[in-house]
Amino acid sequence: MMVLIGIVIIAAGFVLRFNPLLVVVAAALATGMAAGMAPVAIIAMLGKSFNDTRYISVIWLVLPVIGMLEARGLQERARSIIAGMKGATTGRLLAGYLLLRQLTAAVGLTSIAGHPQTVRPLLAPMAEAAAEKQGVTGEDGKERIKALAAATDNIGLFFGEDIFLAIGSILLMKGLLEQEGISIEPFHLSVWAIPTAISAFLIHGFRLWRLDRKLAKDVAAKGEDAG
Image (cartoon, rainbow, N blue to C red):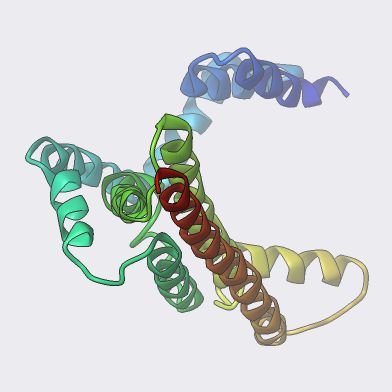
């Protein structure tokens, strides 16, 4: 049971809000030593894993570019575009993004959008600008819109990626089913993920439609109070 000490360290580290990298490395070291591995062997294994998957670190090169674009006014430009569009509402904007996110995730393009590269610099400012046009004021209201933008990305990715048969979740389900003696092709799992993705789009789309209705009613109520 001592080899499970890594799980405890990760849970405690995240709860205490320690540096995630230090928490993961400490968990790996503790788990390896509990399994009887020498510290040098553990470090060698970590280095080999990093070297084998070094292509993953390429995505981090995008982050400085996004930071530079934000410093040059990317968010302000995104806000101004939405502010100048007639009929643009928070619900319509997020529903369109939800559809795009699901479609791209369904064909395996899970990394072309996301929180750091799309939601924070583009989607959230655009949704916030649309909400301001609909009468949303105050920090609480704006923070809720930002949270809704992030949630929309999560929903689109989570329910869209399972349609792609080469995604990790599909392969994990196939492996677990085979352990129970159930043989099924990844394609069949992907096909049956389509109704779930459609349902997720309809349910969240309905929530976004209700959001627009609520904002419209709030604006009308404020106008009556002012009159």
